[in-house]
Length: 61
Image (cartoon, rainbow, N blue to C red; front, side):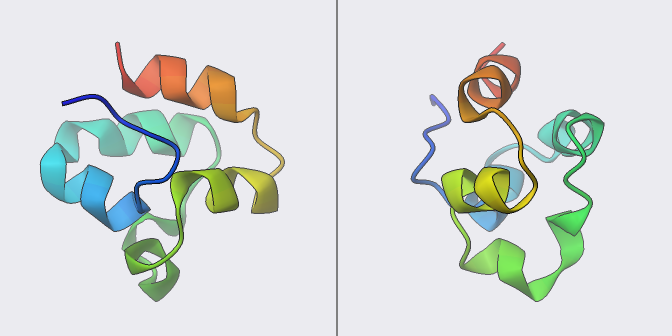
């Protein structure tokens, strides 16, 4: 399944927990925080000043 920017971080982690290190490499240490269950990947990227396109590319490899 392809990772989309509208998915929540929680959904992504439940889909494939092997993606946690990818998120962490981009500075997203929020994988365990409550916001991860409702915040979309795009919203989290904005909060952390991360380029969403680069993040999506890395997650979908």
